[in-house]
Image (cartoon, one colour):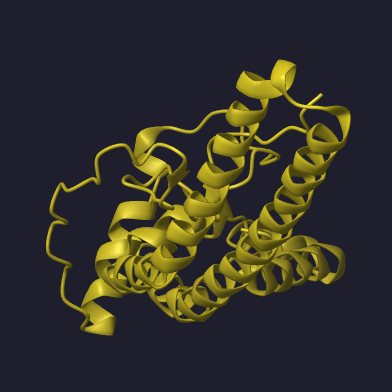
Length: 238
């Protein structure tokens, strides 16, 4: 996910309370020390959430990401076909290189290079299009998920909620009890009214090892799916 959703709840309220306490401490007379002490707050209640996994694992996220994956299946088949064609041409050239004259060899090399460029261009376009549409899904669900997050954090007395989706997260360690990813997913599912998706059937086409379908995260520690791409790399024949 290119754009990260990060939310710190009730920060304004905390800052306001801090400013109020400081003002009371400065202006209060000695006889009002007990009222100043009453403003001292207890420790803040902090939670963490993997917002990317939360989005992808809601019923709505699973439904829309699965639909996006199916939408790109024809493109994946097309990329696989072109990738296989390039591989076959390279194998043929390598097998027959001693039997070909220089002109024919150069012609085949140029053909392979042209098809490789087409493959790379189509792959880049598919990756960009897939990433753009998956980001749109994440942003749409994420903006609505924040309502469930706000309600849950308020009801459970949390002062701060930190997103730990990114590897650059400042959180080095957190107790499992502070992770509210799962209850936020459950709260969002109730609010959205989208039913759980049926378990996908385990069916894979035999020999389909060049282009793999994008996969959504299966657990709350996952991320949004990556764009489809051929597993086999194409290199210019020498």
